[in-house]
Length: 269
Image (cartoon, rainbow, N blue to C red; front, side, top):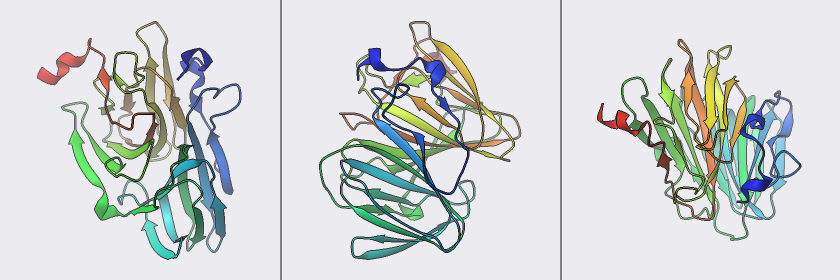
């Protein structure tokens, strides 16, 4: 990725009001997102509504946030449901380039769609709650639970997707880490999609680099933070559960990271 084409980290908070239908949250085009690999969208459907699409030249992951849906994929029909992100594990539909998908809403539905350019055509994949790999991570003050949704499969070429859950007041993505390739780790671009419980709360997202960029955002329910490079720790406010859907994309599809050496000591504390 050409860092000269990327924006300042101060431009990476994206706040898009929810509205009906499929709408953009973050695009790999235009002045702000020049050089970006990841595209993010949100699909809002009312009960009884239908939606059909076909995405050419990109692989995509459709992560159910809440609702009851019937998904038509190739010659198969899948029934998926989720009360909300905090009460039930995820369902995900992976679409290779050129795949058709139809969604019928059997209740009010919200889906986050992340995609990245891809030409290799594989088979679609449906990930259900029992398929989600759950891993507790961290320690005192920075404990969280990580759910791998699209990480260890063989169908995706560039995209990796998961969810992280932090209890009130806890830090996450900690010790601070990055995966921009500057220190030899695989170069991956990332995006976070936030939900907060109760929804009136907030979290703090810090983005910084070893070269002096340093910005902190107050993120709210429904916000999106694009992470093209740099370290990116996040903290939940006291009293509020924190969730973020994360998606990464890169030439080397390997979930690896580089921790800020100034803070790595905490592993032995």
